[in-house]
Structure formats: C-alpha cells, structure tokens
Length: 255
Image (cartoon, rainbow, N blue to C red; front, top):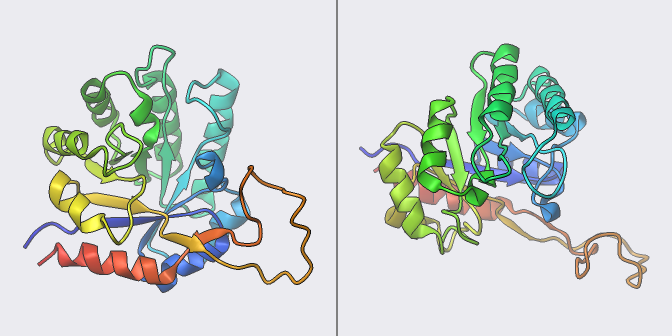
C-alpha cells in the first residue's frame, strides 16, 4: 500500500472552513486576505475552525503583504500571533522568512519555530511559499529540513504547481522522506491526480474555490471595496463538492 497523500484545504473565511469540513477535509490552512496572498487570520476565526472539530488546523503567520523580509518588530509580532494561535487550539503554524539575498532567514525562522514548540511541543510546522522566492531551491530545502520543519508548501518555484512540476519532482526526490513536499498553487480536482503522479509529492494544497452569489438584494456595483475587478457580489469560497472530489483523488493513492 502506498503512503497516504495528505490533502490540505486553504480556507480564508468561516464559510470555507465549514465547506472544507462538509467535503470531508481533515486538514486546513487557515488564513485571511487570500486576494493578497494570505495573511494571519483573526483569533475568532481560529477558535471557530478549531471548534468545528477539523483534525488539523494550520494557521498562516504572515503579518503583511509584500516580501518576506521582516524587521525585528515584525518578528516579535509573528511570535505573539503564534502564541495566540496555539493557545486558541491551532495544530500547526505556517511560517517563512527570507534574507535580503534570497536565502532562508534562519534567525527569524528559528525564533518562530522555537515560539511554536515552546507553546506546544508537537506543533506542526509548515514552511510556506516564501520558498518559491528564494535564490537556491536545494540549499533552501536543506535549510528548511535542518530547522525541523514538517512540511514545505511550494509551487516548484513557478506560477502554478503544473508549471513547476519538474522542480516539484526534484524536491520530492531530494527530500527523500525527510520532509513532506506539498504542491500548491492552482491545484484542483482536474489536475490533482496528474500533479501527484508526475511529481511524487506527499501532499497537495488547494483552495477548492468557486464563486458564490451574494444574497444582497440592494447593490451598488459602481463602488468597489476590494481589488480592481473583484466582484463583491460573487466572492470565491471553498466548495464542498470540490473538496469531496479532492478527498476521493487523494484516497485513491492509498490503494
């Protein structure tokens, strides 16, 4: 029997968390601001997700948009967020930081990991897609493994996991079971099986989203509250049907 392929659903709001659970997901990455690449969610959202009984709730720790070069004060802020997330019941945290030259910032990351482990010894540590902006994929991989991370989320240093398949395959081979390589960015039920087969990754990450029509009757379409082109009256949210399809695909790799 093959090792189980892990499925992580990225959820940016409470409705998505509920949909992920309804679709059969046992593991989520919880964040806010998906249109901005993902930001640290509120404590209220963390508590709500934990309260729904999902087995593994991994909380993104990212205090702002932009690059992954953090000041000492921002690092302190992330440490505070980690403590609060673990106290609220999070199973894991999702972290990452880079130095100005594009290397993994070990000093910052080790502080964040130590904070998580001090808060709860078995906190699951995922290194996020800051990896995809690092200067040397294989040196970065070894650094991330050496720091004791459990999982690396990556698109294979490409715009999408499909485009990054050659690098994903190399990363999975070099990791050799020392860390879980999780393919993310554009993963959906239509391509998930091909990504797993072609790359040899041990996990996939997907938002599993589709547009959901707003129930608002009165609308003022001339005023936008979000990014240009974003439709507030048809926001993207996780679909339980898409999650269920991904669960079926990942389960098929156990046979």
